[in-house]
Image 1: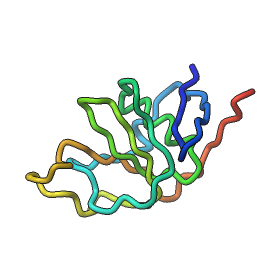
Image 2: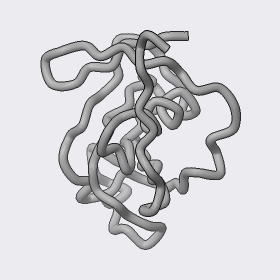
Image 3: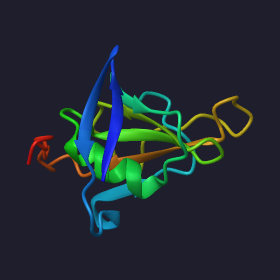
Length: 115
């Protein structure tokens, strides 16, 4: 399965990883106040958290992503974080987003689109 990732103004094709990725990510109840720099995003289709997790593992520099469940949009970010990361308040306009974050020691796993 190949998905199109928006990275800046260009599209990058990534092959989806299949299998369990749940143990690789933690989850905050709301989106982090500071998630780092943008490293890409997915929109235009309804993606699941597992789709976003699998793609984050293949995006260079992706350490976390913001996820909006209603729209299925993922915003991939660069900051290494943990469970104690500050989150937006419940009355914030961003309170409907959540952050999924990777173990800071996880290596990036880039995929060749021809593989």
